[in-house]
Image 1 (cartoon, rainbow, N blue to C red):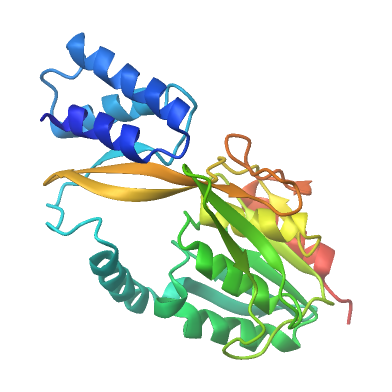
Image 2: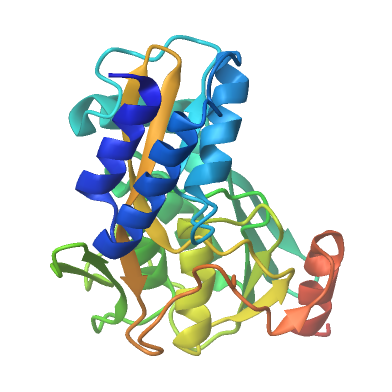
Length: 292
């Protein structure tokens, strides 16, 4: 079976919307029959297949990705991938790239390049939010955050509410099964709580679970989103190794916000205050700063 045939079969078997899956796989098979994938190097093949995968509904989570380094044979296995992500979390300080107090007692916590799973980074992220507990206001900087783990989104939201559980998001798979995400009444460290203002910074690189964090807090009325409209990736995806250097990622569930009943797929998170990403921090600081 060719790489393209493998990808088409994975779409048929796993894509979150079965009717859309049939359209997408039909495009791949038609293009394969036309010879559209004959001859290119692997990187170009990945680009062509990705363009066709996204041609039906623009789903940016469904792609064929070229990797210059050979993928491990167990790439896509949840347990093996969790071990590798844990090693990256340790190398990248749990994704906490900045924790700083600005004038006016405004705390800034930047999270990048991804939101790691709570098991790998919960204590580090919790320490950053605990450090911020005495600030008058908090800025969460997600401008360079490309996505990550939805359970970390729920954990982070927990620090910004009080101890009553809050329903922040759900994910529905192709069979209608729903997973709900709630804040926890018990957290490592101390809460920032729900009474003080929070701003979330977004940009063109804010994607997937990072978008979810911004969207959840915005729709719950807990944070003001400042920056640029985000790309619009609201699906959860799985990874499959289809070649030593090619990874297929397939959307397997869709977010359903408990407030709006929908999500940000294709439209992005629309900021409350729309400014360039480069200006977002200064604007947020001015809006939140407490005069001495």
